[in-house]
Length: 568
Image (cartoon, rainbow, N blue to C red; front, side, top):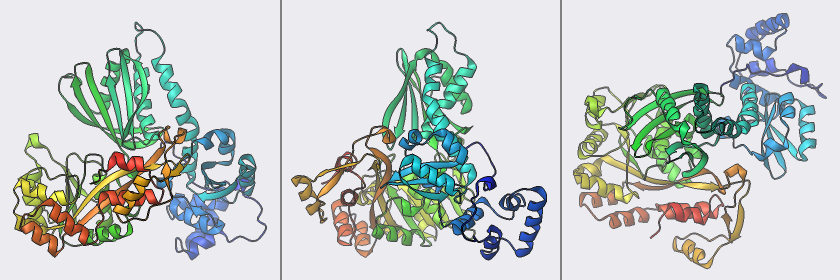
């Protein structure tokens, strides 16, 4: 988020305590954040300047915002908010007035089971908490968050989110076909379309020309939704603006182009990958939003079942071997691999990546993008990387025999290699690599794990319902050895989920560990079905079985499972 404000408590609203509360400075010393001498120096500076102790300590760079949050949580008994995982209930934006949240610097973000969850930098403000409870008729649970985050969340959801649609309409609906489009209008329009995508948590923005109109689509949770429709007279100027932002040549619209935008706006700073493609009606533009929290996540939060999580963690911490993630485009393979890299990455490990293109720049990783026109492809990039003394190598995708053989050779010679492959299930990865022409013996000795995955949409927590399970579904659960539930989740739809009935996604993972039995099958080039049988016999669950487990727990619906996963 763009606006920067110093974090700290609002002294004017601290209530008079009914019992003696431990002092902030004392807790900082006890928790080891600062020494007693540093506390005394900061206290003297605070007394002299009239500033808050926390602000002085931050200004001296002796504590971070996170340190202060931890201490305030200890002092108040409130929980620390995980700001990267917050899902905002848009209904609360209309229920709690902007004047209230601005005055008390409280951001309400969720209402569940009669409890209103709200973020604040000042959990001691009992007056504000009580007023919020009376205003909403709910119990209030306070969470500690950086003041900067709270203020920016208020701006973002109460101002920016509420005005984007009206701003887009005011720009695109004024004047007739003969009215010239101003440069400032186009700049503003481009920014609004990007910021809308960020707020919707979209993965992609599609800008498509029609005969007389421009259509703007957003891909949310894997599904494309049309959001805006405006006159074609805006298209050429909008296309040029986005290409300039992405540093793309605007002089030749007849060939595809790729570029990248480093965006900084009212919603924050993030990267976008831009692709243009010429059509008979003009260039279509697709912008992929590369937001760190959506690309790199905690492995525990990706959706692994306990057994699969333990297997995956054990394997990625082995010193060598080839680990493959497989699935169609958009199934979360990149997120899984980036998250795995972040888990194994530490100062004693040398990690290199070879990508096409670099999805997200991560500090401490040595990342490289292939450039075929310049002579750098996956094959010779792996050769060069091997001379850089790496411990872990990520290869963006195995597409041909050369890349496959070099990845296998690297894993055999003491490196951990992570890569992706386009197959529908785990067992098919073996057939695919053999079809590329690699040696069965080398494959059997190098491959350690294959992870096939998909992403399922979660039913919206704000509007999800339930329905009775059908007889056919009961039989389906029984077929996969899962106790059928009495009821299953049903997607309904509300404004929190764009009327889709779903909000957010979770992964399902089919994991094949290469044990002695599978090794022998690979060496003999056995059929895919035989390899899958061995995998299941060893205790692995198929993708559809993993999906049914999510349905049984009420995470997703049967309709979503049928949409994403095929079953035999």
